[in-house]
Image (cartoon, rainbow, N blue to C red; front, side, top):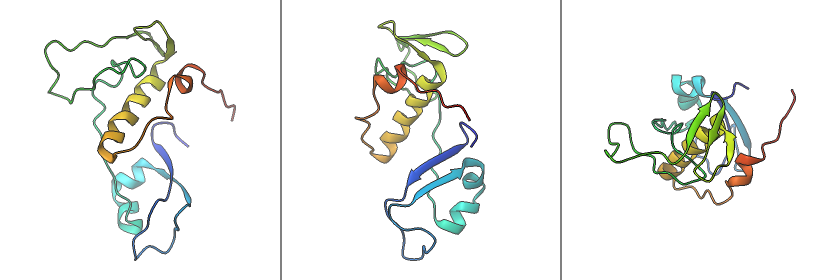
Length: 134
């Protein structure tokens, strides 16, 4: 897997022409394959492109607004700050991985588009990450 380019999920529903998957299957894919059209044409996977503007600047834990690119209000200001490479400080002085903060904000943007519930994505996920040695 390549972080940032791979995705994983569970099949929630399938179309009448799909025979390679069933509901409940776990799937893994490379974004370069999906965006190129291969997976879309073979499996009917819906690709949703999401702009990542302001996801690195905004604090996920503080619930900052995520303006669309080109539509940022003149008075908009993030509550936290990226203080050095890889480290983000929230308004309440939690220190979290900057990439994890941005990733959570991207998930927040995608969830709005798809109508997903993010109740289980919380502070603990960001402030107590688990290191996995491969």
